[in-house]
Length: 139
Image (cartoon, rainbow, N blue to C red; front, side, top):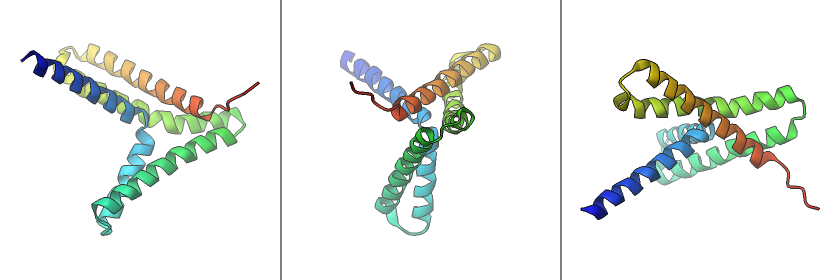
């Protein structure tokens, strides 16, 4: 019985990490999902649709990184960063709202927790974009 409870806690923690990771990469993930849905609807089958979705998500993420690295004016860099971080913040808000809907009875505290979750997820997405796009300087 104890092993089953520990396994439940570990699996729940793994699902939370997966949900947070998908929230951070919300834009490339959703572009990949939509490309896979389109490919499946056009008759490519499950494997073909999965490959199309995987490639589309990777290309979208790579394009965002290349744009962030290539654009020099700060206002354009901010626009690219917001295109990446805004869907992540919305996904973080929705994730926390789904978790807190049953656990937090107060609407005000639920909104506070959701806004904190959105901010943390959006900032995490922004930091991951900046860290990935930052050149490595060797001496």
